[in-house]
Length: 153
Image (cartoon, rainbow, N blue to C red):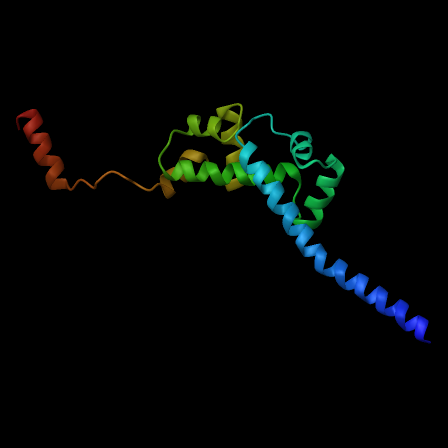
């Protein structure tokens, strides 16, 4: 009976160690993966192959871990990151064509089509609804007085 108890105890300890290590390994992978993607998202040629090489893992291992840990494919995650950064630039009022290049899209048209598919509206429309204006507000009185001075009215 005692040998069985020792075996059971060893199995319990091993299982406990694995259970404790799994979240740590998951968090380490997710952090490392996110750091690499956040560094490379603006490159139109970013690929699973490149990211896996940076992480020193096989492509299949990265795919499996993504599915298990964050329930997204590689391309879905990269798109999420690109659109997150695109929204930040849109809010600041930058031109859509410039944003497309900044966030890793090779063409403005493809960026606009992808953005519309993801957000159900064009980047320009989204920008107009969500833009933060950094210019001081001009009241009607200031506008008309400036206009009357300029045009001699």
